[in-house]
Image: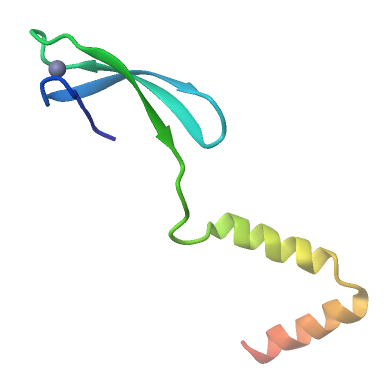
Length: 84
Ligand SMILES: [Zn+2]
């Protein structure tokens, strides 16, 4: 991730990350231009998904399968065997 100094436009360096929550973090930044020397805090936050996580989808499927009764599991197995 790149950050830029708002004072001079040069590239900034993230020197420290302070995670505030699962979705937000404060980024402590420093301008790489020695003459400028500006330092600041930027905030990074999660916005929205573009595609679902494969892990989430798998965990959701497994928890659904685990909640099925024996008849439901057999029906699912038959369905999966038909699709192979
Ligand atoms: Zn600067």
